[in-house]
Image 1 (cartoon, one colour):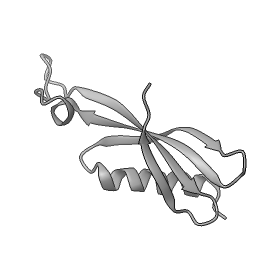
Image 2 (tube, rainbow, N blue to C red):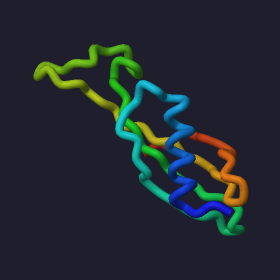
Image 3 (cartoon, rainbow, N blue to C red):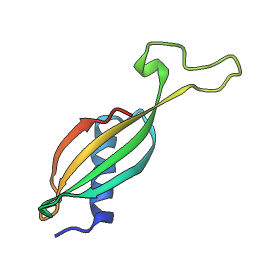
Image 4 (cartoon, rainbow, N blue to C red):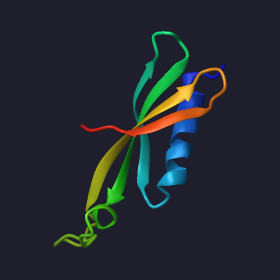
Length: 90
C-alpha cells in the first residue's frame, strides 16, 4: 500500500513523461476514493503558449507566456500503478 506522498510523486513523474517540455509541475488536489482503492491527484503544469496555440512564446515585455493546464490522475493505492490521466477543466 502506498501513501499519498508516494502517489503524488508517481503522478508527477507520469505526467512529466508525457509532457517533457512543460514546467512547474505541482500537486493541486488530492482525494482518496470512497472505497479506499485509489488516490485521485490533480497535477498542474505550465506550457508555453507556443506549444498549445501555435503563438509566439514571448510577449511584448520579453517574458514567456504560459498557460496552466491540469490533469486528473488515478493511482492504485495497493500497487502504485497509474490507472488513468484525464483532462481537468477549471
